[in-house]
Length: 109
Image (cartoon, rainbow, N blue to C red; front, side, top):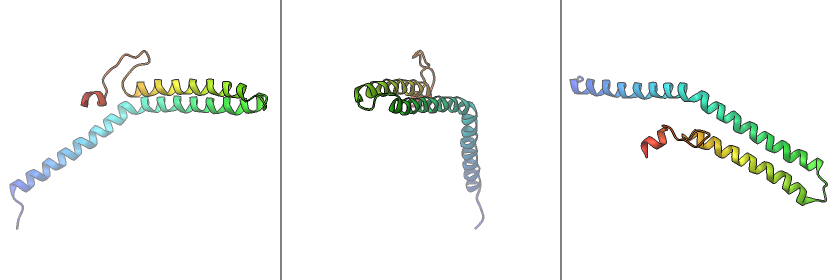
């Protein structure tokens, strides 16, 4: 049995759809990749600062004064949480000032 015109058209259509999806993925990564990488670096740096503060507080603060240690570490953890929330809002489509702009998630909601 030979291929019919319908089989050929179906194969071509499938190739076009797959090619379009791959091209879209490459373009999306090229456009959004640097921004996402910058946000990831910011979160990683914030996490490292939080760990450094907790580690230093362990040596700097009186070992018998657990409340002082908790206050020092708690303040840094809260700061880290805030930085993470800002990063998440930015990745979801909100600027640092809270203004929203286009995002894929919003466009499909």
